Length: 77
Image (cartoon, rainbow, N blue to C red; front, side, top):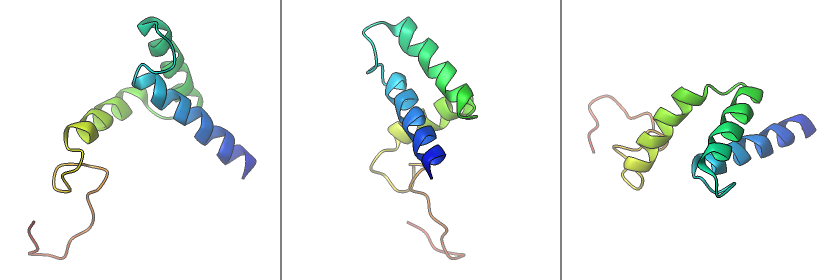
């Protein structure tokens, strides 16, 4: 439980670096984000790709990869 909480905190910090909210310096944000994602064993580049798709489709259940849910066969939005 403690380890999971710690890693979630690290991951959250890395996420904030992805939004350039950790430091005024882009370089520091990129460096810290890469180190943190590597530490918590999250592939930075695949996370970045899916996170960009998430922000593009935010609020649209058909386009946001985070909100996609299993649908019965034949069901359409």
